[in-house]
Length: 257
Image (cartoon, rainbow, N blue to C red; front, top):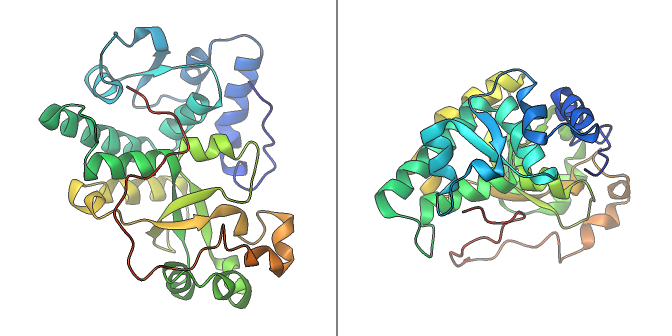
């Protein structure tokens, strides 16, 4: 498994238990066993071969309380998210299983499953003062990151999506989180988990209540953004369109059947 720089701001909150799991995996312990060796999660981690052929991944997890694991960073971070956000992960998994039970797998996921997958793979929770949220939703990037830069000292960005965490192992400017607006009072990981779990409903997720945020633009997250010309890249910091078509978002991670 590739080495992880736990000093990076996006990884620092995951250092415990991430470093212990990584050390176990690097020493030859199967990843699912290394994940199980940490504090109990709502699911037990099992090798990928435990998933029966043709079985839906999310339904298998929900029905068996077992999460299949493949070697590599993608499932490594997925396991860590189960540890750090157990209530929110369980809520998303329950909704996925319910949607599959009702509609089947199908060619398209549908709005609820699509939103769940987007957040599960690429989501983040941003607790920030209102002026930052207003600028972010309007995609006023220079106001967000330059004019209001001192306000970021009062903000906290928590990455939730395991595919985004995987891709941040090799950071690149265009990596973007789908962020959910969280209360500025969410000081602990347990509070953030409870907040997310309470809002993980089909009604809320069907509206896709997320806002795109290029994460390396966050002050203190990448040295290059100290030069404010960093935000002049319109391929990454795109202006808000007057009307945006509804599309199925391309995810950072591979699909899982």
